[in-house]
Each structure stands twice: as C-alpha cells, then as structure tokens.
Image (cartoon, rainbow, N blue to C red):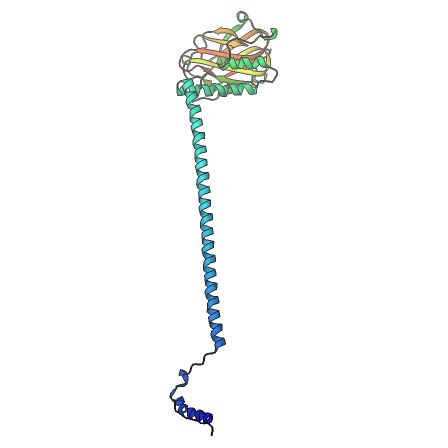
Length: 312
C-alpha cells in the first residue's frame, strides 16, 4: 500500500462515524444556480416595486400640478368675472345717479319714463314720411316744442264757428242714437295718452273703443290733459264726447278746452251725465284731439267719437 492510499483509507475511517450524527433535515445542499436565480428574482421584484412607486409618485405630482393649475385658472376667471360684474353694476349705478341728479326726484324719473313710453306709443302710429305728425304728437306728450306744425287748409278749424251742444246722456240715448250710430264712429283706430291715469280705471286708449256709458278714463286729480292722435287724418265734422257716469256735481271739467289739430275751443259746463256734441261746421281732416281739464275731483270721459255726418 502506498502512502497516498494509506492516507485516503485513514481519512475514510475517520469520516464514517460522523455521518450518522447529522439529521436528514440538517443537511443543506446549496445549488449555485438556484441561489443566483433567487437573488436575481428578489432584485427584479425590488426594481419593479421601486419603478411602480416612482411612477405613482410622478403621477400624483402631475395630478397635483394639474389640479393646482386648474384651481388657479378658476380663481382667476372668477376674479375677472366679479370685476366685470362690479364694473357693470358701478356703471349702471353711475348712469342712474346721473339721471336722478338731472331729474331731481324719483317722481320726476317716473314722470320722464311715462312721457317716454307715451311718446313711443305715438311713434308707432307715425308713418316715415309724416314728420309733422311726429312733431304734433311729441308736443301733445309734453316732450316736444310748443310750436304747432303747419296745417293744410282741410285741417284748419275756426274755433268761433264751432257749435257746441250739451245733451243729457238719457236724452241722447233716446233721441240721437239713430243720428249717430256706433257704426259711424271713425275714431277707433287712434292712440291716446294722458298726463295721469286714475288707478281704478283703464288705459287712456280705451276711451276710443266706442263706449258711451261705462267708466273708461279719468285723471288722478283735477287738472291735466287727455290726447288722441291718428296716423291717417279722419275726415269728420262731428266730435262727440261721452261723460263719466258719476254724480252730475262731481268730476266737473271746470275751465276746459278742446284742441282740434292744435286749435283750441273753450268748453264750459261740462261734466258727468252730459254728452258734448261739437259741430265743426265742415268736414275736417282731424289728426289730433286734446282735452285740457281744470276742474274738480277726477274729470274724465267714457268715450270720444268722430262722425263724418249726422244721419237723417
């Protein structure tokens, strides 16, 4: 036996009693390939989770930045809108204050608005080529010049030749209805305005609706005016004014006048229960009629009619 053989044999004898002392589950066999795979898997997993966390953080940062930008834009837009609203309100208030200062008091503002609205009603009736009517209507509403427009010969009346007749409403309905039937009334297509309107009654234009025995219009107070205008002149000779139906001693006209195409005819002793029949003496093209009241309580009228002739 050689020396090498003896050495191996001795080592083998020494190792034999040791092996039985180790339990089977205490033997660990390390596979280099498995270990390397495990380490690589762990590293890859950590890298994956780190990437996910980094991506999530980037996304959250982007969302926060976008949200902050949107909120800033909304805040800026709201600020601009509020500034615009404040400026508009300030401008409107300034304009209102300027008008209020010019007119003096709130009642003057209301009066100015009413005059403007009445004028607009009249303007709708005016044809484009009739500037004379525009001037006349503006004058009737109190917002135009006091000078009367030039009249054509067939529009001029002579106040001294106008005949007036006062008839009790009961007598008129008994004796004059056939002479002046409602079908002959030419005044229906006009428009009307007034210096004031009593709250209990209707718009001034209702007095052109053909009523003869109903409460249609009266002033608020004892003094003022009612006026009517027609876009196309009405060819008529007789003007009939039907009264209010209140007590005969109330709502008197007092010292009144009726202007036909701007020519004034004085009227006295007119009031409720009395019909005023005016004969102009000739067929006249009537463009405007204005009644000026200076009486008692709340003078007014039930209706105004214009007839071309008197039926036999």
